Image 1 (cartoon, helix red, strand yellow):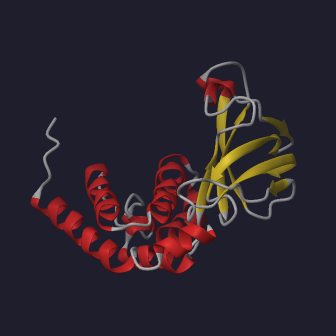
Image 2 (cartoon, one colour):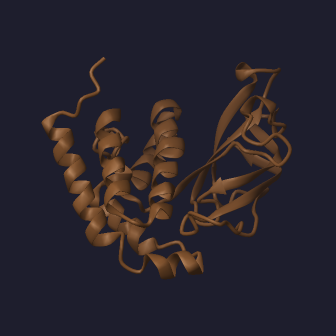
Image 3 (spheres, one colour):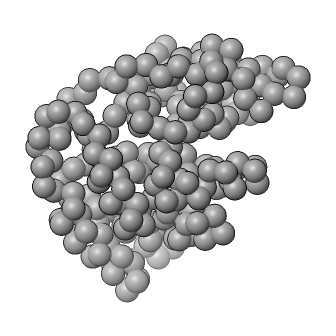
Length: 221
């Protein structure tokens, strides 16, 4: 397998470096000290096309292949100082927009992918739990069938973008042990039974907000 950059990927990377140097450096120390999520820089990244990288063109994205997306993200990290906002963008892309594009229903894709690709909506994922950490196979959040829907109960922690996200991919146990017993659910902010905790203080990546989630009788289709 050839992992060398193509000329197009080199151009993408160079463009991302220049964008990050111009837009993601100024004021970074003050933002980091304040622990403030820079929505203006999030929007600037969206205008540059970052949040659209892995979303298919049919849903408003640019449908880049994985290595081209990596070229852009590497360029952002190389050219910019604010690794917090870059971390938030990558979490949005890799663990929310990507899974929705790959595994979501047609209705979910139609509703959410254009908004995720444009940056109008912010995505997050919730796997880590207070007792099981990031061991996904050990999670204890459960989802049970109830009529035509599901009801989720449990808690998550260290959810990147949690305080600002509009939609969450939440993993819960629906069956026995192992991978086959875990299902991902798309849960919009404001869904009854979904609680978003206070932001978690961090020593680094402070411009990337993080919080716990609480699920108490959270009903989804």
